[in-house]
Picture 1 (cartoon, rainbow, N blue to C red):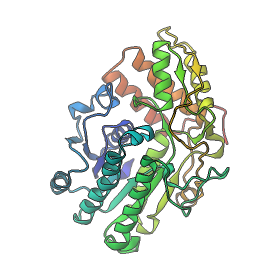
Picture 2 (picture 1 turned 90 degrees about the vertical axis):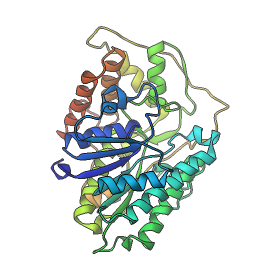
Picture 3 (picture 1 turned 180 degrees about the vertical axis):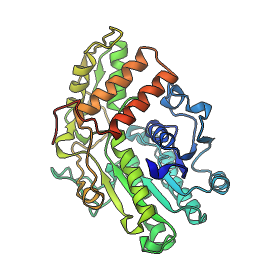
Picture 4 (picture 1 turned 135 degrees about the vertical axis):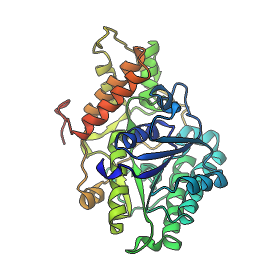
Amino acid sequence: MEFYKGRRVLVTGNTGFKGTWLTKILLMAGAKVTGYALEPPTDPSMFCLIGFDKEPDGLRQVYADIRDFEKLSKIFDEENPEIVLHLAAQPIVRESYKDPRGTYEINVMGTVNVCEAVRTHSCVKSFLNVTTDKVYKNNEWPWGYRESDMLDGYDPYSNSKSCSELVTHSYINSFLGGNKKGSAVAVSTARAGNVIGGGDFAKDRIVPDCIRACESGSSLVIRNPYSTRPYQHVLEPLFAYLMIAMEQYEDISKAGFYNVGPDECDCTSTGAIVELLDKYWNEKSTSGKSFGAQFSKTDDKAPHEAGLLKLDTSLIKSVFGWRSTWHIDDAIKQTVIWSRYYLEGKTGAELDKVTEEQVEEYINKNTYLSDNKC
């Protein structure tokens, strides 16, 4: 956290779920944050609920499209960022089937625009492109994919993020020094697994869908209850991103391509996630409210999604000594805590406070919530 105090950091896509949490961490660290994103993609949105739409101290928010290179370049001119964290994306698999062209425009040409802005602005010393665990050609092996495995996502979303990786690789090799010592810019990509946590209101994501079902008391159709994913709390990859960006800023030889995922014990089926969420949701909150729902595990008309996907995180562990802090039980419990606050009508300073408390708990490595250790 000390490293980021006073640093000029530009975050694309910061009005989304992950981007909001990342902005919160950076502001807590004392960074000077420029957010470049569209208006929040959901209503409600965590971004607005905790007051970031009012631009708290330390944040300059720019509402613009990542496909608008002229606007993006102008913001680089004005803010002179030292560190760039690229999260802007169309992130939903099912949406990519509905609008493949738009998905490619955002995820591929958006990445080209950010890489070009980095290339043409010498102020940037560290750049991280956040992609996804779905960039790999998924043979549904029982072992985790390594960073050297073939890239080739199946659906338009996954494939467009594979292309985003390749764009970044080309810019490294062609313009940014190939990550060699002495290069002006250190560049990495981070391939993260499925994230969960409070404040996610997106459609077609299992935890937000469950919480909406719990809120309404309705049943929920689970598309692929037996599919296995590397689920992790949103703070896990975000702190990994910040670690990578910091370490490569100070030592460019650490720049590279990194999987960011949970330990083997936390690669969990969608059905198991639902059962854990239902279990913890039915514990009474401080207000005495209790929510519950029935879950139906069928959807024969759903488009293709992979049944098994795991990541091998040996590289990030060996290079940085990184490790998971919150395991799956902890992640679900923290998600329930935040979501209950929201459903009990808390907004503004109260939601911002619980967000800050969870960041502080994570930093302090309070893993006492669960005995589920790998």
